[in-house]
Image (cartoon, rainbow, N blue to C red; front, side, top):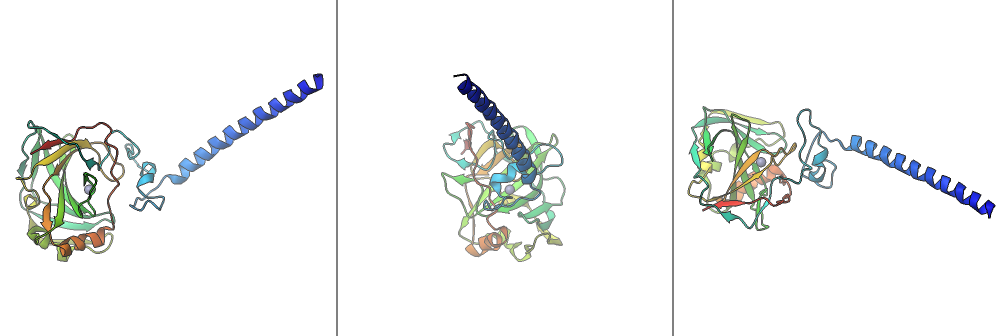
Length: 269
Ligand SMILES: [Zn+2]
C-alpha cells in the first residue's frame, strides 16, 4: 500500500514536470513563430506566407497593423443594403490635372498632381490624392465580382479617408481609360510621366449613379480602419481589351471580402 502511494506520487511529480515542459516549449514555439512570420512584403497569393491570411503579421514601422481586426475591415460583400434618403449627394469639385502613372508592384496608381480637387461628403471635405485599380473588383455585389474596380482616394484635413469605388463591366469603349491604356507602366517601379497628359477625375465618377456607403478600412496593409467608403452602384463600361490591359498587369490584386460584423450598408438611390 505504502509502495503504491509512493509510485503514484512519483508518477504525479513526473506528470507535473511534463506539463511544465510542454507549456514552456509551447510558449517558446509561439515566440519563435511570431518572430518568423513578421512579413515585410505582401502579395495576393494565399499559397504564400505573404498572402492575405498572413497580412495581420505584416511589419509596420509606426502605428498599428489592423489587418487581423474583425471590426470593420474592407472590402465587403455588398448585400442587404438599407436605403437611406438622408445621405448627401456627392459634392464633387474636381479640377484638371497632370498625372504620374506608377506601377508600385501592387497596383497601377495615377497620382494627382494638380490644384485641390475636392469631395465634400456628409459635412467633411476631402482632397483627391490618387486613383488606382483592382482586378477583379475588391467589393462584391451579392457574391459576384466585377472584372475591374477603381478606387479614388481622398483625404481630409483631419486625416480621415473617403474612397470612391467604381466598378467596370464589359461594354462600349471607355474614353477616359483610352487616354491611358497605351501608357500603363509594365513593370514594378516603372513610372510614366507626361506633362501633356491631362485628366479630370470626374470622368470616372458618374454623378447620376446611386452609391453604397459603409465604414471600413484600407484594403492593403496596414488595413487601417479609417475609410468612409462610397461604392457607386452603376458600373462604367469598358471594352474587354481595355479591361485586359489592366488585369494583365494587376495579377488578381484583390483582397478577399471581410466579415461585415453587424455594420449597416447604406444605399443612396
Ligand atoms: Zn484600392
